[in-house]
Amino acid sequence: MSLLRKPAGLAALTLAALTALPGCAPLLLGGAVVGGVMVAADRRTAGAQLEDQGIELKAANRIKEMATLAHVNVTSYNRMVLLTGEVPGEAERGAIEQAVAKVENVRTIVNELAVAGSSSMTSRSNDVLLSTKVKASLVDAKDVPASAFKVVTERATVYLMGRVSEREAARAAQLASTVPGVQKVVRVFEIVSEDELARLQPSAAK
Image (cartoon, rainbow, N blue to C red; front, side):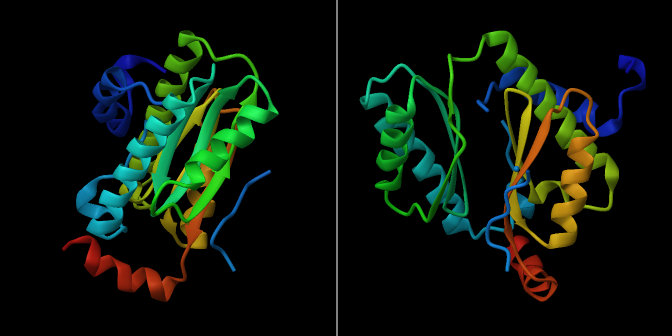
């Protein structure tokens, strides 16, 4: 795609990609996924947002204290924690999950850590670019609330997080899957009903 014909959403998000380097068969949680969400339209309560920030910081510190040769990224959304990255073996994979599970306020853990060598800086840079393109595709689509989604990309696999309806989840996953370079899309959503979604909308503006 020519830079001169870049979609509006991608143009707006390019700077963010240059200044941040997150780590980063559908998986559906909560039903009967650096990236982030815009606070003004966040469907989490203000308290939950603060808890998520605390979870990510405390979990990262615990992993660091373990002094394991691992590349781990921790992303928390409404106290649901996604672990992505690479670890030397299954023992480290399990130990990290257990350590993060002990962090205060953690509700659920989705362990997507791969037993593999740490990804290269080139791979991580590509992941940042893919996250940017996925976010841009959500913005440009107009039929989904882009700010309700958190996007994490690891080794060209895109993880989508958020409190969304089934329709929104399906549409976002479809959009992400069409972005060139994305190898797989994993849904790590908290699915809510349309009625509950309607109740969430006023709280997002508070």
